[in-house]
Length: 139
Image: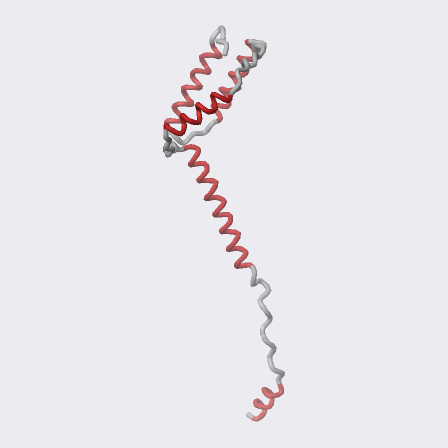
């Protein structure tokens, strides 16, 4: 037993454990996951706002708007509107190809809403009628 006590006394003291090398990974992963979640949350909110009906929250007063409109009418000049030259009519073949292209794009659209699907189906039916017609009405 004496030898055991002597051997333990002769052993060098243990050095402290090495510092953890990957101490920064947990906060980094936490920050990355938080930023990805925030990005996904904001992009889905933008899509929902575009697709949904936004309630009208504008409150207007008639008195200030009439004062502004009368002030702006008095300051405008009476220049004639610019006359634009009429554009050349698009040939029938190009119109028909354009309608075919529009029909192809309507077919590619994937909808989740039954109302939106019905609207697109009606538009496709109209495009098919225009393509099959002998003469295409001018726009």
